[in-house]
Amino acid sequence: MQSYKTHKHNKMKTLLTITAFAAFTAFSQAQDGQVTINQDNKIVELLEIYKTATNNANYYRIQVGFGSYAKAQRIKSNVEIDFPDLVSKIDFDSPTYRVRLGRFKSKLVAERKFKEVRKKYPEAILLKPKKSTK
Image (cartoon, rainbow, N blue to C red):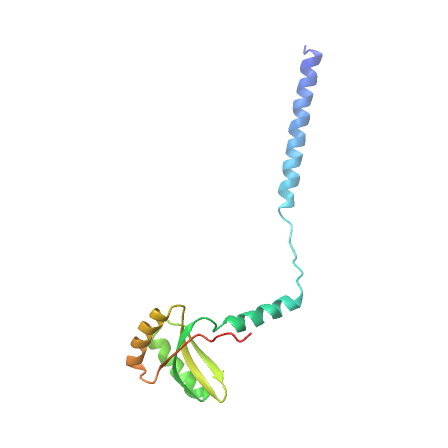
């Protein structure tokens, strides 16, 4: 026969085990929740404005050609074949479309790549970063 203390001790162990198991189960079930983030549409608009403003800022770029949109697309296609490691983009700068490559932080790196590009595109020009007027 068990003593009163041993019986009470076993009941406590059982109670603690059940409590721990219940807590573990409750916490593991809480992991299945879904988080919904509500953000103001102005944030998306501001991010787009920021991306546009910083897109060409502080980068040297190489302009390889310009003209109509169709001509710019042809130039861009050729540039992507000739220099697949460089980012190429068509920018509209009224009244023409301009094909520009690269985003070089340093003038030295930009000038080295510019020399390489000029071998294939002799009319290419190196564009300096635009200075902010704001």
